[in-house]
Length: 279
Image (cartoon, rainbow, N blue to C red):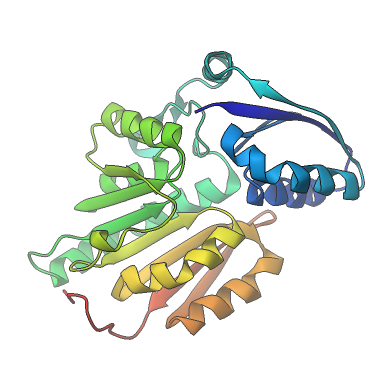
């Protein structure tokens, strides 16, 4: 996959203003930010260039200097040289390459902490569902870090999905590096075949607000009765619209956690859904 890079200078009075701008850029297709360089796939740029230019022009403190093609081999070499193996809890090691989610961003670290705290719950649920596997979905997996943690903590089956081909390759590499077997597929939505007969007990989605909203119906349909959906990658101001969307699909918000400006929302499927096997 070829990439373009937008060279942008920013001068914000508050850190949260930069966070909001970066989230808006993420909504337009930017998948990696390295200092003043904002990277996105070249095929995405074709439809997003005007919106990126408009956002930069209309955001105080932002100056778009140039957008140019980034040779794929040079981009990878530079990224890998500057981002060595990340050492995380439970002995998990992540090589980030070009994918988001090395484990130290506020949203990722919140998810990891909650997964570790959830280990005993995984064991309890597994004892209740007898011979049925405890299934986890990681939507927007990036490096595969959350999927790997879920598998390490006791999940029987983990499906990791990402729209970016390089992220899929990176997640597979990191799973092998950690000796964990996860299924990694490329896609921008959840394939019905992945949950038609066996829904997921836990769904993880650490992406952007708009992607979370667009996929809420699929999350609800793929979630087992009593199962949990964990959403992150958004701010306090995004909570009401996400909660409303979740509730409209039969999911009850049980907890909202915070780390700086970022939030993690937990939802639960409290009603059985017809058409899917119930453990």
